[in-house]
Image (tube, rainbow, N blue to C red; front, top):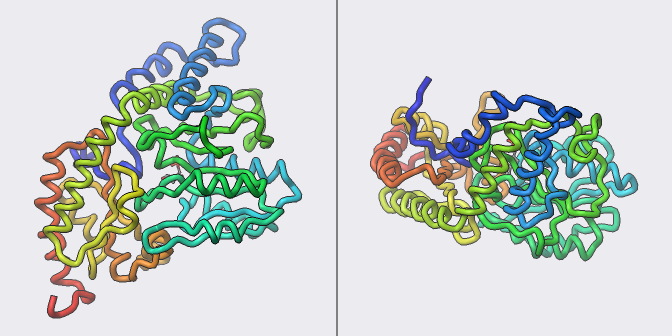
Length: 389
Ligand code: PLP
């Protein structure tokens, strides 16, 4: 097992914060009861779940009763869309975007095979949506519009409130996959038109295996997982108490520190990005650099493959990621970059660096030190590199 890494892949998952880990331990060792039990040993845990619920609500500007704990972001996304569809059986149209996470895209493709009609909104070269296209796509039978708050690959932030105003003026439900946004940028649901919002613990320094679906008060939605009465009948299954309390702690930390941390992380991200662009030719940033998460940069290094860059970075103990996915033995550039119209040779050579408060300046220095040699080495052997370059 490799331990010490320069970890700049925080949009994939984050390290558990030490305070969050400490919060979990008693529930894994001492307090193993079932919160639904009549006896005090188990029953006392119900109030701990509610404390965590309040902390998540405070981070989001929501009511505690609007917070439903789930197992992950994917479950929250599925629960939102399937729950709304099953409450509105006469409405068969869904709107989403071409750049969503597979948790939404693959679900929508599955629904298309089962009698639903899905509109996939396009994005431009900067990753921005056309509000005009959204307006034109809205129909009387549009049950739900689901868009992401911020893109996991590029960090590009959608204009959620403008989108929400259009959706609500046409009487549809509005779901936002905020898995990448929560804990990284402030979100205030008390002033929002969002009906449903998904988040995932492991993206904000809580453990994997816990998420939240925010359901605005008064929203008619059928439960996705049916069974016991947990989560007021909205999500059955004995509660993952240790992870729920951990998520509560992570939300509390994010709420307290979001502004300061954003500044620190943004400075490191900007220095890394600027340094790479200055040191390496034929390199550019993918997506809007203004409306963007403070921790993410997605950079294309032309003429080479992102996967090869990752392998060489890995030899230096640096963990990043690329949008390419290996399908049927051939490397496919990311669906996000292709939807943005990034040319093939550049989309292939994209690398995402996603930072967190646990990175530091010397790690940025190390990446800046090793990257130019990695890129030169790969370009020297790439058949795509133009001869003169
Ligand atoms: N939505 C987005 C935008 C994501 O980035 C991810 C995970 O990367 C998910 C949903 C899925 O979350 P989880 O891993 O908790 O299922």
